[in-house]
Image (cartoon, rainbow, N blue to C red; front, side):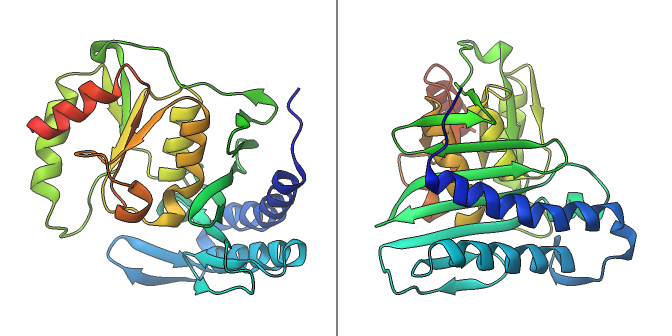
Length: 263
């Protein structure tokens, strides 16, 4: 049985406390006050409440650490080397439409490197967590990426550009090429869970463009600690800074990247 460190326990407790409010609000989703934040990008009172709870709980345990969160932006801490990177509700559009596929994502950055991550799916009661050098886990079970070797048997996840984003044509060419090469493609609308599912071997790979650090920080660590490969879709850059991400096992990462490049 996996033994969680003090750090992972701090992160998990904060996520659990924020999740209680999310589950209550999800049960009354039609009564939520919703404001339009941008095309296809909504913020609800649930987001802001969860953000506030997470910041309070993590500050209580580590008062000197800074924050980067989707709802509150960046807050410098007295400890300049440590920063929490948080998405209090990844999958907000799912949440607001009553679709039970969303999560809380918390990562800890130390001197520019992600060293711990927790992704909590409160509906399914699944906590994905990882520490650098210590492996990735789902609740108490050790995770490994899938071992599939052939594109023809692979299930791949993605995130689609919405609204009037100028990269839609490129993405559709890539989607067409990937769909012609794999068994199927899924688009479930929560990047943090997409990454966690690759770490758990549920998906064989995932790619998306234009993400934010809070969408992917915890999930990228999970994939790495589960034995997966992480890169940009078309190169070897850092997805955490570019927001463009491709993850897969060592057998499929190369063929997926080659297919995306050719498209």
